[in-house]
Length: 332
Image (tube, rainbow, N blue to C red; front, side):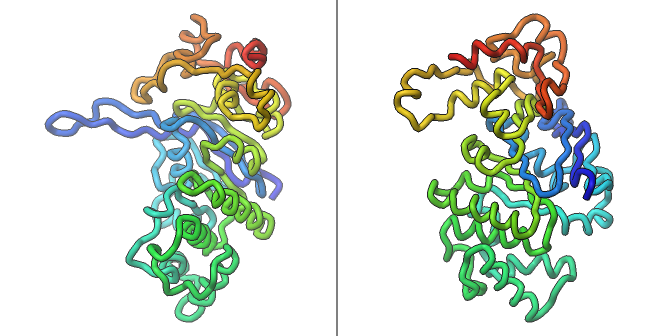
């Protein structure tokens, strides 16, 4: 492909907040509020931010598990945001999802063969013995014994269950996989195994990932580019080396200061940036800049005007009025 695999344009996903006797919609929770992004074939885009900032909702909107309120989701030129269920079905083969909790995402009443083989049945790709053979091939590809096809989820560990989830996502040979915090529920040693597996599969199958996570060090390891999200909007986007070596948004600087450095001498001299207060409610977000209520650089301008999402350096995008004045924060 010469162009982007996926383009997100001004995507908005709101949820009604209901109350009263008749449960009427009284407000809107703006989980994702006007974000734009282009993703190229073969790359891994990391998405980081605090809990409740809209990362998972963005991923589910791309897969169309949640219907967007507005904006466009262009996959190879087709707008998925407006498609009905029947027209959307062929595109579900191309976009799959790996869920966060391997204990909740697998049906306990189904065998591994039924779990991984179900997508093939839904899309009429195989039947009978061919499904069983295909499932065995997929299990071997994700590092599991093919003889496990008749086992149930409770017979596996957390890491093995997540590998089954990866096999299910690969069953339809997709082009794009949304990884919704696929390692957060796993032990540290198992996290590395799953991430290495995803990297190997990407090389072998030319996959494209949206990798949602809280672990900034893991995102740096696996991602080509990294997006920092706060309260439903993007605040910074750059390639991984640029973002980690030269963050420009105060929120990004605060997040990176919380990552421990494996050097006791450097760690002892370094001063943490403590973000004061809690994340505001997405039902009633602050005016202007969403981060201004916790930002040490905030002024009246931040309350009056929403900062423009702009390219301040080559392929480095920031939404901040004072991005060029954050050097003192980085020196703390």
